[in-house]
Length: 100
Image 1 (cartoon, rainbow, N blue to C red):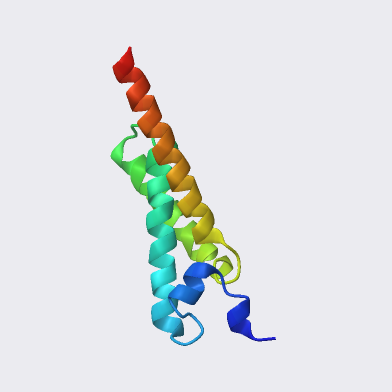
Image 2 (cartoon, helix red, strand yellow):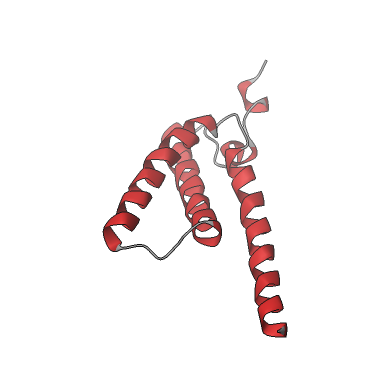
């Protein structure tokens, strides 16, 4: 069995099997950026600066673990779907508030 058949879409896109250093960094940045967008769109509240820094530090640490899972599991793909759903929700919410 060839390992390239088991790679997730983003891992195959960034060629993690051919260029592991660059591919893993690109996968990590993709997961981190998508996680930050999901957090901001769906869960972020107005917090003091220190609490926000702590939240983002844990987010950075968690994305490190998710990157290793994202090689074979569709972690980044799931985050893309979550971003799309949250963007659609925010647009509809904004339109509903403007209609009232």
